Length: 184
Image (cartoon, rainbow, N blue to C red; front, side, top):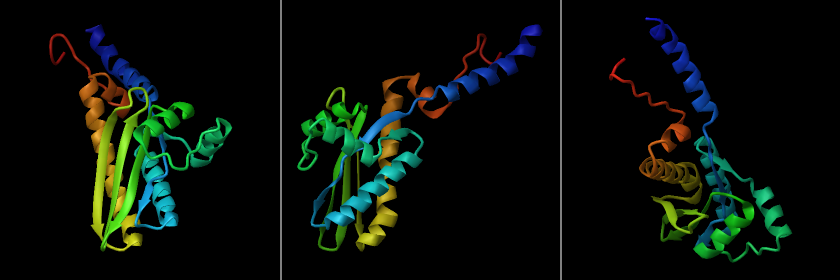
């Protein structure tokens, strides 16, 4: 009977420790490539992507100023870095787990954003997301950009859950308890 008395407080302590230990993925966002869209608009949308990723509470996002300072110190030319191999090299210099690259474009009246999240350790694409909007660029910023980021976050969460049974607990602050016998 005494062990039942200690079970609830123990579960609370274990849950609190698992939430504190929750590790976020460290990412950097490379400036998206403009395709038929003004560079200033692309910079603003790239900044919005960073903010939305930060809000997802799954990532630690390297601030753009820090990125530029580190890359400048390392003598890395960020301009023209559009290949996945170049992005991986950038991610390694920045010391991040993942780097996000992509493009923002316009065809006719349709704006589009495409994002790839690349695992810096393996060079493989870990998640992708894209969104289209037959709208003006300001509506695209407000509506389509957060939608694209949410789609990427969903893909990342699926990817994490597929990799390991332990990782989701750390990534989302959840706690899975198995008892013997079940339900004890």
